[in-house]
Image 1: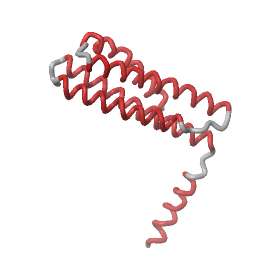
Image 2 (image 1 turned 90 degrees about the vertical axis):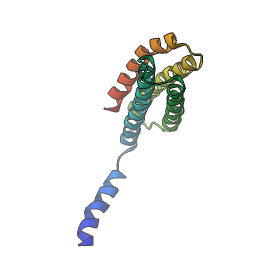
Image 3 (image 1 turned 45 degrees about the vertical axis):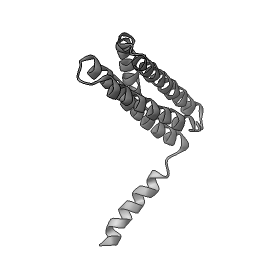
Image 4 (image 1 turned 135 degrees about the horizontal axis):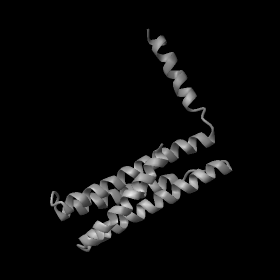
Length: 140
């Protein structure tokens, strides 16, 4: 019985490792974009909840600070990818730009909250929403 279960599992693992470099970069790009969109969404939600008086300033700031650290790790991880062709280079550049823009928006929001500048944080919502939408689009 174990051999019957193990054979398909082994085949799936082997096939997953057979993806070419372009496909591997595409998969990494989609995962990085999804993770980045999640962190931008967390930032946006924290600001909205703060503005709606459903969250205090300190926890909102902490959520945004944590999201900033997490998206920084996403950016760093994706930056380490190696595009193997012109097509994968275009994907790499597009996702890198979107991640950089999103990280900058999260950072600007953290700075605004740290300075108790709710008006600027509120204005950042449009930037955050556009960044999240772009990353979700890239995530597939």
